[in-house]
Length: 125
Image (cartoon, helix red, strand yellow):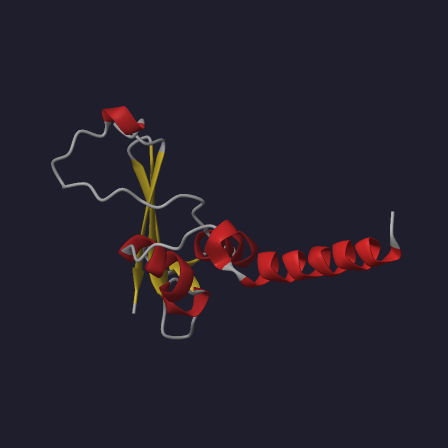
């Protein structure tokens, strides 16, 4: 192989690598979905005020008081390590898929969501 050919191939490889890094066509497309916006930008640990977890018909409610500590109903203090782990998990959720908007009366069976094992509702500022 000629030295000029080697240089040309090296330059072509470098330019191709730069184009691949700079152009966004190979990256995951971002969606303007409201759900993704909430997950990515609005759900922060300091903005949560109430967490309601429902599992098998039993509901546990955590509320953040004015001092910033999480409490159970009756103003019983929650375990700090466990509630911090729950808040961290909820506020670090990321979706790999673009959500599909559904009407409130939509049939959830095709999506496997007729009876979710756990339901979590959060209240923010």
